[in-house]
Amino acid sequence: MKSFFKKLGRKQKDQAEIYSSQNIITAPLSASQILPEDSPINSFSPSQLIVGSGQSVGKQRDHNEDSLFTFSITIGNGTNNQPLGLFIVADGMGGHQYGEVASNVAARTVASYLIRKFHPIIADASVTLDESLQEIMQNAVKEAQRAVMKAAPGSGTTLTAVLVLGQQMTIAHVGDSRAYAVQSNGQVNLLTRDHSLVRRLEELGQITSDEALVHPQRNVLYRALGQGEFLEADVSTAPFPQPGYLFICSDGLWGVVSDEEISRIISEAKNIQTACQTLVAAANAAGGPDNISAVLVKLLS
Image (cartoon, rainbow, N blue to C red; front, side, top):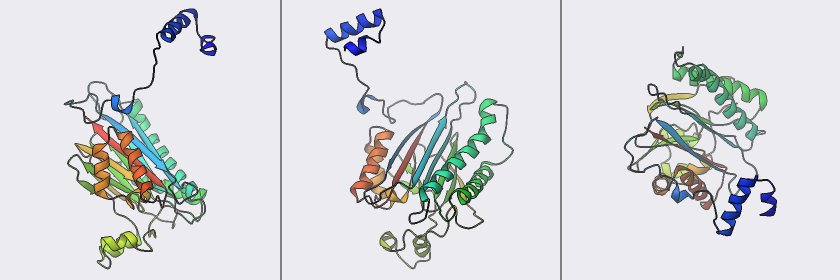
């Protein structure tokens, strides 16, 4: 305590001495003391996004080629309380030079592009967009494509980016990272379509879903950022799952953790951050064959 007292004023020092003499201990709140997201409150004002994330190199890789990005903002002014959020997972292509560079550049480029687009609106509520959200997302991916090809030629990356504005999600997707809507009743709905060879074979009826999980070419992609001069992302719009969660992850998680297990872990977790860490731990417990990234988002409104 002596070194601590040296940095205090007289009043603070006296107070600290009283705490010490009474054996009073202060500590951060535990996860069980933090208000759970499903607490019985009818409505939240202003509407807001709460976010958790988790990441691991896995058990069988020596470095991490995944990148994730989360950003959310809430402006409460009594008239316009729409939350804005951007959530990204990118998985650098294993076996390619600079895979980690590609994923990082892709995530940062999309984030930078979208934040520049929305900054005038954040600063001035009277400003409106001159493009649709789908056009903006498509252009963001095209800029990321150019950036990846310049920064990491010969490499590639997946990209799953979700822009949330109010109760609407706009999703831009390339590769085999995934976005899910996890409903409060336990239902898990896939919002993206894998751009992988095995997924295409499955769609053609040449292999079953069980065969796809163990297919030797399950990691082969036919569409990724950094591969080819021209790239068209899958862009779609959907309502934010209410009540429920948006869940984005790399194949290092969904490839080894079932939809049922994902739903169970999320529903049983005390809060969103605990859910993400438990999901990452479950992927590692299943062997951790790849890098693992997870982003979980809930809309309180």
